[in-house]
Length: 310
Ligand code: ZN
Image (cartoon, rainbow, N blue to C red; front, side, top):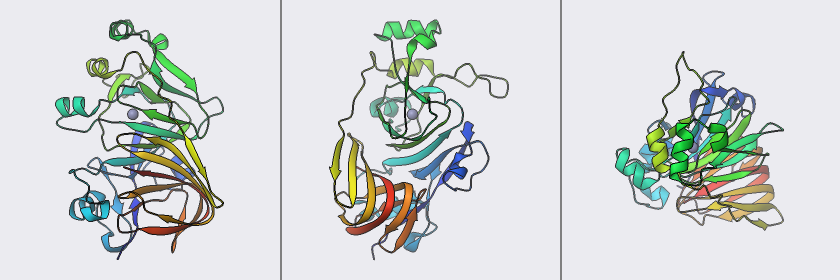
């Protein structure tokens, strides 16, 4: 019997986190400093539990390990994707991720990290850090050495629904007042470049300057994703990004439509509104996987979905 896999998210506290994962999404959160909802994840640092059906109570990593047929029989020992919602009440530290080859060599065979962000909400004058202004590695090293952070870091304005693809080697950070849905390779490897000289328990958090200089791309090149939109009478589908690691679509549902599964499996997050998938009611804040044997489904309602796949 084919069935959807609904996720029980894992929550992460952080000094920069807030309480909007409760006030906006209704989740039960561990404290008013909750930074991340790991919504669809099989990563050892936050492995989601299946809520319903045959696999209820099992971890996603276990189901992925034992029932690869639900995931199109894909190769590899790690579930490849991770979907998060991030609530930044304060600025996050400025960071950069390695690619697969650097992570494999320097981080015990871990995956690198390509990630992308959809801005769910932000302040009216919201800003984000993406990229830098050093023209080459030697200028990068010099600016870091001289702590010329304001000259180095590229800060730009954002608004709700903006989308950013963050490739390995891209300097990036979410700033205060921003809610983000992140789709990423299943990796937790982050190099902290600058933390605004903040103190935690009286001391600064560790920086990873050497690794950051190793992996930062110079100069920074803004990769503008080509977005295509497909309009139908009862839904629109907007392709946000397709890269080597994932495809991410934003789907607006405003009626009833039949869909066919055209990928090994899909990850779905409801980011606004409510409706149904077949006999299941779904609403903002729900996350589920459509497995390989769930070959067609009817979506109905008035809602926005982020749908990702390999
Ligand atoms: Zn990141």
